[in-house]
Length: 88
Image (cartoon, rainbow, N blue to C red; front, side, top):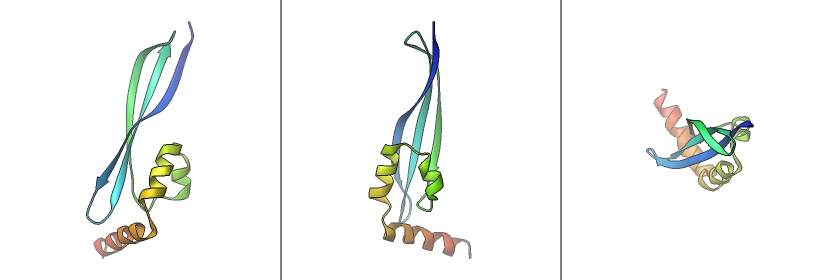
């Protein structure tokens, strides 16, 4: 009767904002006893184009691949322009 816990990537959504896109990442933590999920919880986080490489390092490989394809240099520049003009 072993109890284990696993964290899995449950969902990734690309959400269009103004001139940039963010990623919404949902993970699911399953508590498993004898190959049966006896409890689970979900956690959601939003990633913006200015994410640091350290923060990105903790994300699953699938998320890193999406970020690499989605957030081009011009996309990140567009987001930074928006942030700097909003804070003025």
